[in-house]
Amino acid sequence: GESVGLHLPTLSVQEGDNSIINCAYSNSASDYFIWYKQESGKGPQFIIDIRSNMDKRQGQRVTVLLNKTVKHLSLQIAATQPGDSAVYFCADILTGGGNKLTFGTGTQLKVEL
Amino acid sequence: DSGVTQTPKHLITATGQRVTLRCSPRSGDLSVYWYQQSLDQGLQFLIQYYNGEERAKGNILERFSAQQFPDLHSELNLSSLELGDSALYFCASSVRESNYGYTFGSGTRLTVV
Image (cartoon, rainbow over all chains, first blue to last red; front, top):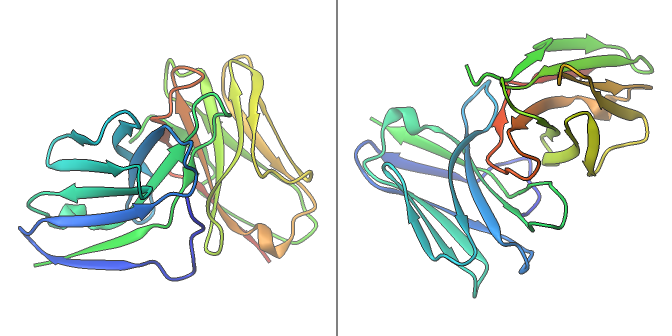
């Protein structure tokens, strides 16, 4: 994961469009990745996870893609809805190397009506 | 409601003071994790307990300590508070020691003045 700066990257999308949120991780040995959604005033909420032996995993309206070659993770949200407005974080972990998640830079997703 | 309960929701205290943050994990969860979220550092792992025992330690200051009680609730003690300790403190829980799909609570917002 990367440090979070004072100003989060922002992604603005129109309602109904697809959203793609990107994340770069730094530890090439990380073998498990998670996306979290954090709405204002709430704690992070688990969205979807993926192990390093996979390239893609799909959930309900969400897809996570993992490119280990360039250490890049993306979250795709289909048919974005106003309720998707939140800050999205990726997190990675090296299983067996301690139980802490390292959170990446958050992205503020704004859904415009 | 995530099932993870944190109290208090807000806390304002002066520098040099000591506070205790409390967390009740989701029913059935044995692992408790503490995270600090500040503007300039993002989400930082502090410490993990599993069934009463410390399991992993992150960037936790010596002025901070935590414990997990027999009923599985956890407390995070912050002492000799400094202005820079102002942050959101999140507790998360999971069933197993190495289940990384944590469920987060809504956090305690600590303001040190």
